[in-house]
Length: 227
Image (cartoon, rainbow, N blue to C red; front, side, top):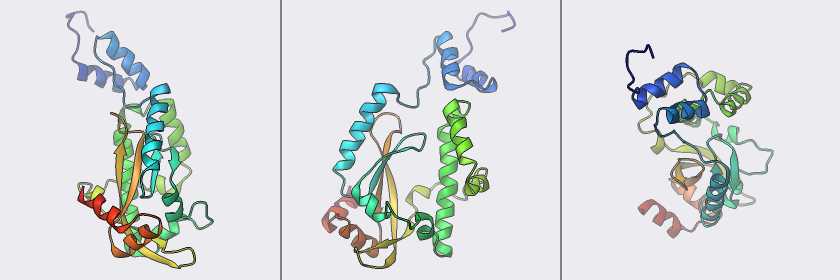
């Protein structure tokens, strides 16, 4: 840069320069290509994205468990019927009150919220100057909880994916609400992490009974946990 060497800087240094210059993803990749380095592509676009979403839809349609399809911008691209019934969608009964009905459930909800926000920021670290990222953050800013937890670090993120969550759910059409425990797993349908399928599994007896009501037989639940 000061005329003393014709040697191209290493790839990581080029990435650091792009960060210093607050480059968008496209600008960073232009810089890498100009230096004869491979660009960084975290997400699918165009026809590749359409095909991945179609594949995700086919996979989800064969799942007996509650599931939804989500993109890296946190857009939900599909829900299956077990998911709709578990979370009462459509319903006037908000999901939030059913996930924070006592001190324990609120603590787990808060821990998951903090972990999810920080995971989103880490995953999109190189996209934070992109238009879509800035637009999404502007939408988020209207939510008090996001502003509250945006800079809070998880107390223990090492086991967060294994932590259970609690929600009030129904065991039948006319039944009352009971607390159940469940966990969520992520299934990627392509080499990038997104788009992916978020799948919900029961981890206690009330949860297993609710999931049976949703159409997932006990044997199916057993097989899911043995894999």
